[in-house]
Amino acid sequence: MGISVLVGVVVVGVPLLVGMTLIVVGIRGWLRARHLAKVGSQVTGVVVDNQMQSLSDGGMLFLPVVRFRTVDGRDITTVLQNARSRRSHLANSHVDVVYDPATPDRAQRARNSSGGSVVAIVAGLVFAGFALFALMLTLSATAMNLDLPSMD
Image (cartoon, rainbow, N blue to C red; front, side, top):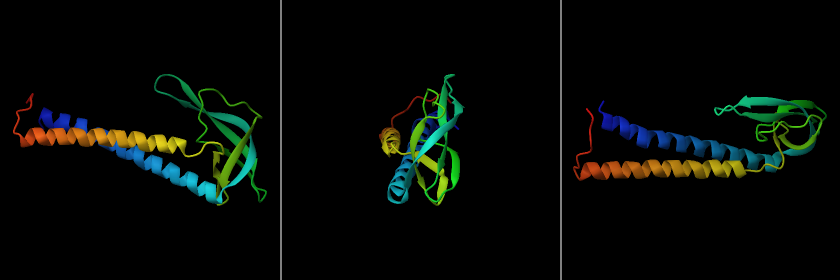
């Protein structure tokens, strides 16, 4: 495989893959937020712990572990995936939670809407747009029979 083909795969393929992944993740999050808006129940939960995630830059993210009681009386303890923070969540603090009665353990923080999903979709479109632009440049250079530098 020539270096120009490898560069083409990296310049076009990687951004396209990243873009499509972001778009799919964003659409799934947006659909989930819409679903919760329709069928979800909102209750108040209590932060009982924090789940920590390491970042590549050495920093940490904290996700609140909350306990709440469903409308039908079940006690649920779960991690709120959409409430990441660089600061620890205070134990015993109250947080509004929205959950699907069919899957209450996948609850979300109520005040977070689909804003993050929209950002993911837009970022995905930017990556995909860049990849398609790079593909068009590559194809037009090939069609014009330009000699692209090769390190074969």
